[in-house]
Image 1 (cartoon, rainbow, N blue to C red):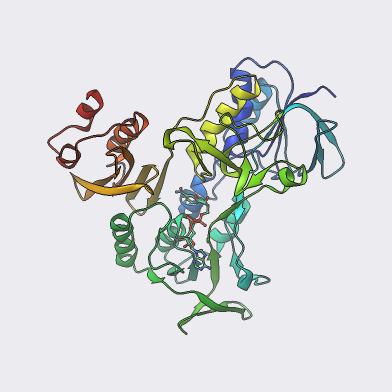
Image 2 (cartoon, protein in one colour):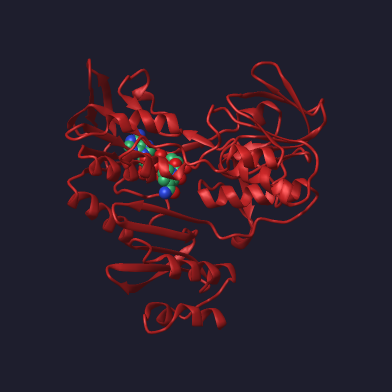
Length: 410
Ligand SMILES: NC(=O)c1ccc[n+]([C@@H]2O[C@H](COP(=O)([O-])OP(=O)(O)OC[C@H]3O[C@@H](n4cnc5c(N)ncnc54)[C@H](O)[C@@H]3O)[C@@H](O)[C@H]2O)c1
């Protein structure tokens, strides 16, 4: 078999990389290995549209069978890569097949973090795949008692979906408030209020003491003694990068597979991208981060493809993600953790943006919340300001009379 480009992981990142190899002129073989039987599909709808659509929801495929065929991308589904043989330069599949590579991309993503207390419970589930989503969806219905462990993105998007389906929902969050990871308190409060208005019970700042199955439900006892009986508990307590193959192959890992500026691992013929890699983020002084975000997966897939073909382009984008809950749209651009000052700009119709400035005046992040897409345009402009390392005047950021676009010209 010809040594070509091999990609392990057929999620957003791996698929984008496969197509980008062709777009950038690669003429050899491309193999895309994925564990699931389905044609690669988008994950963002799984906690939202898939949960609430009237009809039986089909996965929203990233590309059609015809597009894979036209681009001569060999999608090897239902297959798990068991090991990487770096000496022979081949990927060994679980059935013993060997796929030789010239260059390899690891795009294995992240998996839900397990909650040891829930081990063995029939009524505790996690959401990662389309099949998981169908199983959860089947249990969301009028008056179903749904407990959600973890007030992060999965938990809250599922809480909103479960309410739309008429379920009775309790969210249990260990931290003092929801969305501690990456969302400022002022915005988290708007989201919390919206969930409460919808009848969701939020229990923050409490751990879980025990989880016990009964025949057809599960009893959850919180550390403060409160008991919650649920027909289903969904656990969304974070994700862990899938690094086992890389580790077993002797590649350097930390919280993620370590890559250099152009997404190359400690083996020059092996690249890693998306949720599974820890990479230096150029616009924040090259600090190493791991991002779990749809757009990052896409962008790094394309970038890895160009660099697998000999490029040496660094990753220079501003991190960005969104979440939709009820009619609310949340968007965050940049990383706010080095910010020392926050400026609020009201956009009208209950929408607002928080600009986060570092001590030297640089805009490092912007977070916005509002109905629908109300914050999208301004977050996009903020992203451009962040990208440029702009030091906008706080009073101008605050005033809705000053167009953000005009700050770009400054
Ligand atoms: N809109 C989006 O960007 C979106 C939507 C859905 C999923 N995702 C992705 O899916 C992955 C998983 O999402 P997630 O919501 O599980 O992760 P998360 O990190 O967003 O949230 C996990 C939450 O669980 C809490 N937690 C941790 N341990 C706990 C415990 N023992 N008991 C109670 N709470 C606990 C954390 O404090 C945190 O608030 C992430 O990669 C996420 O980015 C993203």
